[in-house]
Length: 197
Image (tube, rainbow, N blue to C red; front, side, top):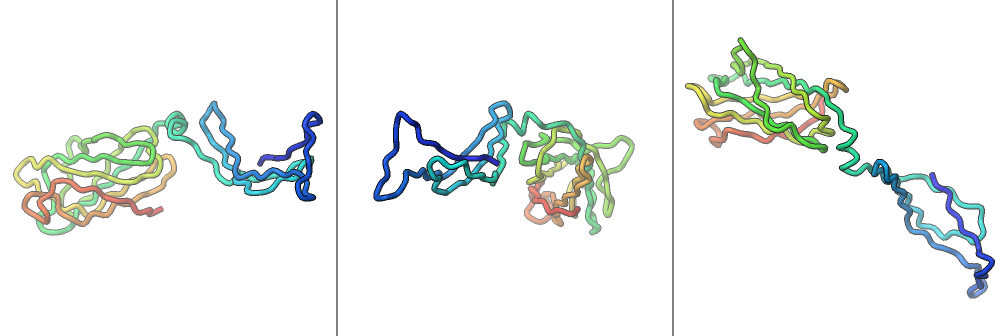
């Protein structure tokens, strides 16, 4: 909170106007910490009496600018859980990759690979770990494949992403084909999040 008041300066005596004492109308106060870039907003919207002891105002909002947020980011792990649909010929032998987006940045393109495992088969669940800087609140997941191999078309049910620091789980429903022979013939999808836990 802040305490806000004002006093008359002896060298500049204030005059009354139409019988009223001099007053000061304060609309808004912003306090910025230059070391972190954090801003504290105080919407005052009030007349302040002269020579008062000061009125207290609570902080209504604390804003951390993007530069400050980036400076405070740390490396965390996300578990990526891929659910291939349970429909005929749903699996793919193509190479799958994703980009995970958040309010603080994105992962860049990441290939989903595991040695010695046949990935993305019909009705199968595959898990991967991605390590990157904290992305903040997740906003989008981009997923695609390269249309390689004999049977590249793929029916993706959904993707789940678990923040392994907080155990928060975010779902990205798809329920569509990625392939040249199905649906709209696209090899990529942009999926929007829903919070699971």
